[in-house]
Image (cartoon, rainbow, N blue to C red; front, top):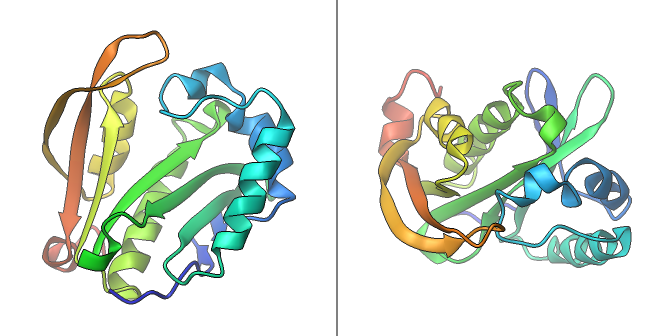
Length: 190
């Protein structure tokens, strides 16, 4: 694994870049305080923009570490900030990149999540020399699984009754991954 950090990535419709503290205002408005988003994530929605600002201040500082892979996703057409995508450092020492992403609900079902996930997968395999990329989603959010499938990831299995959602219901975590070999052998990911 090469710790090359967060570099700009451009797709047909999106620009992925390092986030800034100023992005916190649109992040708060577009997804951090939205009920529709909150039900699919394990963190609590932000009640005030100050919470988002503090998080973004901390995240900006993390860019000093080349093991930080975190992008803000913006639309190229109008520079609207629509979400984030990042990699947990938990398994990086093994060349394993666990990806997480979050988008504002008004940007769902437009292919943006798939487009950015494909781009990050490409970056992690081709520039960071990752061995495996994985992701999980709560069973109450099957649309996230579709994003993973469309991005070339394969279903691995279910971590049963692993988390509790905002309605206090237990949810399975559904796991997907793609190996370096699968990526380079796949025509759809080239």
